[in-house]
Length: 225
Image (cartoon, rainbow, N blue to C red; front, side, top):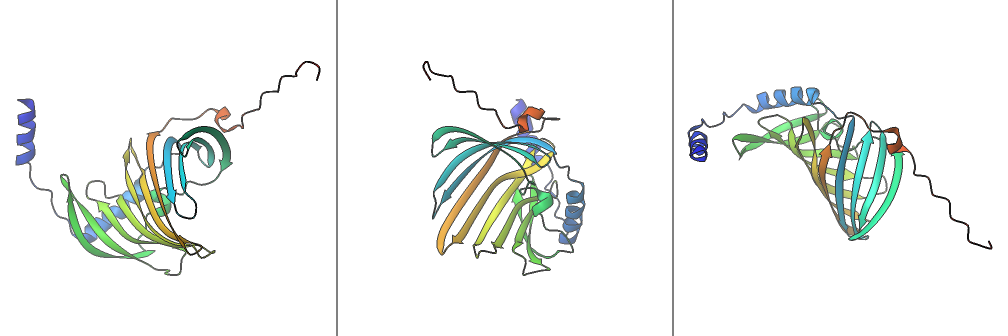
């Protein structure tokens, strides 16, 4: 009976309102400016790459600001535990990747239904078209007004060219990447890469030992040596 009542309520609920594309962009700019960004987070990712080099790896990442502990857990299906400690910025954030008004011009390209809300699709034209990385299109979620999909192209100084997509979604109170797909030309050969992000956690802090290189245990001395 409860399920029937819920379904009846869903059927009788009013259709989501269609917003003017300029209003959506205004709300997008406001949402992007006010979206919280986790300073401390733990997550896993799996990367699959096919091309000049075939890669299949699973990692667990511990991050506090720019401090990173990267644990490799699986390589080509085999368990492997290696740890790297480093310091570098998080590239896969909406702060770094989402296109800003003023840096891009946006052309409304239509909308699509997603559950009980709409998504709004825009083509993006970079003010600096010679930049090595640029967003080509964006899909904005009609509930949060944050990007759920970014399409991009990239050209590296070494001549590697690629196109791809990054999917974002909500985890806890944060808007984080869920997956990324890239197709590229590396040294004249085609390559494909898929990254899936999962198991997000947002602790208040991480112990200092998280970012200390593990000490090797001393080798036991053998008799007579």
